[in-house]
Length: 151
Image: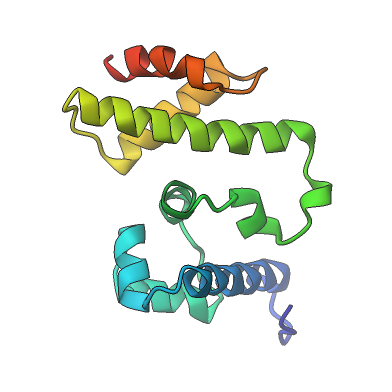
C-alpha cells in the first residue's frame, strides 16, 4: 500500500491506488499490452493509464468488464487479497454473476439480440437478486437465463 501525504480524501485515495495496482497486476498476469488490455475493457489506453496512475476512480463499467473478460472478482479489486474476509453470500454473488454473465452472453448470441454493457449489467443484476438470490446458479439454469434474455 502506498503512503500518501495528508489529503482529506486520504483513505479514498489509498483505496484507488491499491485498485490501480491490482488493475496493473491483472494486465501483467494476462500478458497483454496496455493497448490490448484497454480494448478488452472497452476503454482507451489513455483512460487505462489514468487509472493505473492511481487517485482516479475506476468506474463500475470497467469492474464489470474485468469480471466478464478476465473473471476478476470485484471484491478483490476493491479490497485486495483478503478472501478470508468475504462472506459465503459474497462468494455466492460473485460466482453467480460470472455464470449469469456467460449464460446471458450465449443467449444473446444465439438469439441475435443486440446488447450493450449497460443492458448486460442490468440483466445480471436482475437475475442475481431476483432469480438467484438464495442459491448457486447451475448449468441447468441456462434455460431460465435464456428465456429471461429473450425478454
